Image (cartoon, rainbow, N blue to C red; front, side, top):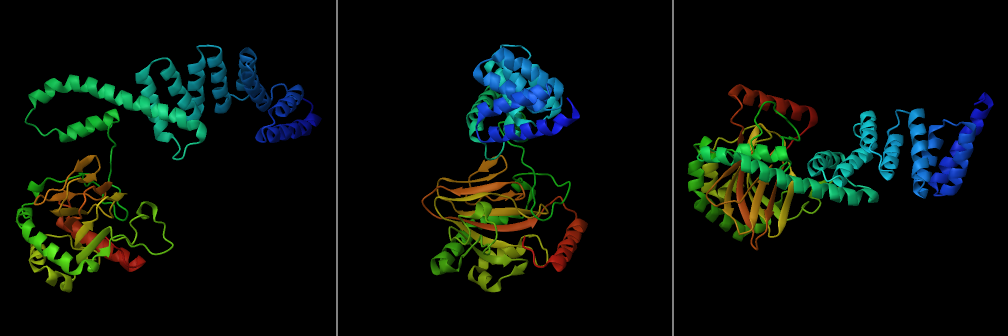
Length: 424
């Protein structure tokens, strides 16, 4: 192509792009044709003309044009993806090779990965389709374009069907081992199996403030590891009586737990912000004992005084009654630091309530405490027709040494001195 033709080619290419963007495909084809006359190996012209030929049903012509485009611009995954479509239209076995080539250029090229999953799905290779579709669902946009919705729904269905199939297969293989270790606690193993097959998600600690490394991401801790807990559990009836008396006398003193100021993004807290549907009555807050509130429930306060709660000046402990109204969801969220654990003492639990931490969903049982790491995603639901009530307080993570606890206090105090008040 002569040097003087460059401006003319560029001008025609711009006009062709504008025609494409405004839906004038025949005019775009005419303009790209002129580009090709001046520059026979122009990849943009070859790709569009190949696409246009494929749309018109000229599959052989489309394949030839797109092969030329791929030779002219070998590092363009979009061209190779279009070439795979031409191969599919002509039943050419090179379709999969073209898709792999596009993904070699860009491993995260979503349309090519989706097309690869669809290739295996059409071929009846459910296992390989599920493996590819699992990756597709991982990188799919949160808000998919309209053209993606139906293929993504099919991808999800294939993945879900395969999870059932592989789980059934593995359970048969594992039956002998389960029988051999019938008395063993295999809950962690079962969760690992579910994560590997895709039936469960791998949850990790996600503190919003302080992430202390090398603390185990345990969802619910074993109650037997906290010998002081038995005394608190045994006093459940007493705590409940004091709570109910307080609620009857002064329910208006319970404040909305979620109370974000105006102008702050609410995200998942939109429905609960400043709402009495999730309300609390603090006995301890930001590391300070509320003597007036504790005086209202003296036996509960006396029990808390004996509990080894986390102590961070100006931040912890926190201890409060938490109420959740019927048909109310506390959405998935995470806490501020894994240096502490949260204790629930269930008091009032109507049928239809549950509490999930990571992959483990449990029902509250009055008299049975739950101890969990709140930096792992958790949520709660009251599906009953009465209020749910729980006493909540925080304790140190038992995997911290005394020195680490002391230094954590100094760290958080310094952070607060630098930035201002923090809330844990």
